[in-house]
Amino acid sequence: MDRAHRRPRQGGGDRGNARFAATRGAFAARKPANDNRLDLRGWIERIAAVALLIGLAALLAWRAAS
Image 1 (cartoon, one colour):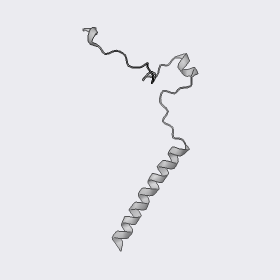
Image 2 (cartoon, rainbow, N blue to C red):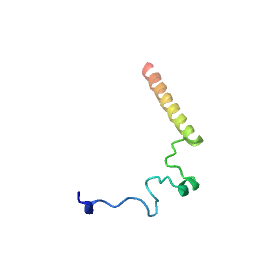
Image 3 (cartoon, one colour):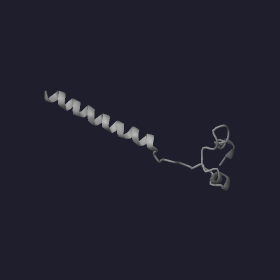
Image 4 (cartoon, rainbow, N blue to C red):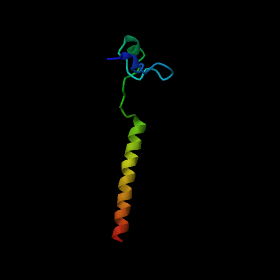
């Protein structure tokens, strides 16, 4: 296998490393690898989106019935 044509490792630079390095320094910085938890604003946005869809469906049903 010719290793000369391999792409260099991604990461570094201004954005930091794209992959999470499980090192003591990374854990000390408290930077999670992937945090998918929703905060309060996220929950409010989701509830508003669902309420809007329900409202539009009700409006469409009301207009179709009359």
